[in-house]
Every structure is written in structure tokens, then in C-alpha cells.
Length: 346
Image (cartoon, rainbow, N blue to C red):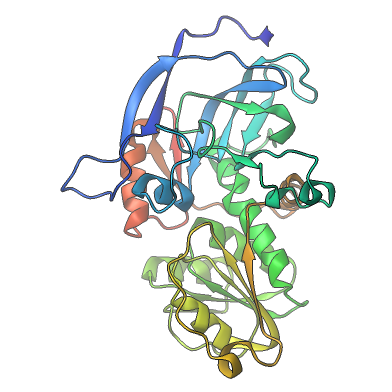
């Protein structure tokens, strides 16, 4: 193992102790703890975290909407930092490099899905902050083959949200099959949506945003959207494609009804409340399509990060000290975050 200087004996991290609602009537689901710092294993890197984005998936894990895969797991899958140690067999990273640790942490590489370039559908896929400890911590380890080399010229807190909010938004936009210069409808306007809107605009599309939060509507217009209304407002014209970011199943028929003929709605998110019954002629006839989005491939990540390096999307960052991760999640739960919440060391 190669290291830079001596490593600390222990490290601090948040863990999901008892999943449940983030409210003032009970102890929060997150607990801060100290634990021994583990050295990276073969093919792994140890990263000292400079910033970690706060994703709605972390909220679903903390509140129990997303069943935990491991006991007392550390959330966080948008971690940016410096490589402090490198395990045996690592290729592509050296001590001191800036690295990004994202949602997809492992895939088998041999199943039919992996062999066909769809590792996001691998039955044995593993995820940072769900299957293995994530970035709500001082340090995080990752399989080097699933980590990303990152831009040295941009602050860590601006890079962190790109690793999930950006990448998932990229895949959702690809799944929506937005035609050139078409009108894209975006339902919900949080971390991922505000980056996806800029990606679509940079590609020459037009954007209409539907969200319940007035501050988010103002941000959408500032970023270049031509329309910003409430979640249930009618679209100013039929949508060429749409992406649903809000985890609200009731919005699926709303978005489908707003689509033009041949349009596609992609649902970006790991959790969604129940979808009401659909009417075939109103919601699906005339070749309207409903698609889910499941994680991402490493190719998605590489393609999006390269596109983001060219287009330089504005990242609307709300900084929180690492030790206030529980506050950041509570703010996210009640829509007090406009743009993205990012944890940074004190």
C-alpha cells in the first residue's frame, strides 16, 4: 500500500442508526461516531473527503423509504477528496490525486447486463452509501475502477453534486430522448434538475419547469428556463419530452398528459410514491412512453463529466458543515434547500 504521510488511527462518520422520519418528536436517524480507519484493500483507494453532496436518496435511506442493505451504513455517494492511500493493483490513481466516489460502487462484470454495457442493471451491483460506507465521513474507500478522476480547477463543493445529481440527470435526459430544440418539461427542481436543465439548454433545447417551491421556480428562470410554474400547472404547450425528479407518483399522469404525441417521460429516482391509475387514451396512446431510470453506468459518468467540463454548469451550492449532516437532510425533507446541499469539513 502506498500512502502520503502517516494515516490517522481513526475517522469520524455518520451512520444510519434507526431509520425513521426527520422530525423534532424523536431522535434523528443519524448518529455521529468514531471508528478505526481501515486501510484500502486490493484495487481500492482511500480518499480524504473534501466535500460530499446531500442526495434525496440519502434522505430515503435515513427515513426508511429505502430499506438499508447494511446495518449502520454511512450515507453519501457524491464524495470528492484527495487520495491518501492506494491498495495493491490500483491503476489510474496515485496518492494526492483528486478523486470522486459516486453511487455505483461495483458490478460483477460477467452477467448479460454487464456484458451488454448495462452494468447499472447488474443483479450483483453494489452502491456507495447503501452497500458500503459512503461520504458522510472524514474518509471513504472505493474500488478504484469505479471512482472518477476529477477536474483540479473547480472547487470540491461544486464537483460533488455532479457525481450523482449530474450523472443521474444526464441518464434521465438520455432516456427521455429529447429531440433537438424540443421543449423539455422538468417536474421537481432540486439538485439533479437544476443541473439537467442547464445540460438541456446547452444542447439547444428549451425548458419548462414545474415545481411547488417558489424559490426553485425563481432559480429555474434565472438559469434560462422559459416557463416555471407549480407542479400541477398546465404546460404552456405540449412537451417534446419530460423528466420527473420529484418522488411523487401522482405527477406521473400529470406529466404524461402534458406530453406531445410520441413524447417520453423518464422517471429519475430510486423511490417513488404509488402511481395512480392511468387512462390509456389520455396518458399513453399516440405512442407516449413511460420509462424508469436505474442508477447509471460508468460510461454515463465519464460522458457527463466530460460534457460538464465543457459547458461548466452553475452549481447552486448550500454549504453545511459535515457535523450538521442531519440538519442538511432535515432541510432537504421540507424543501428548504434550493439547488444542492453539500457537506464540507469544519
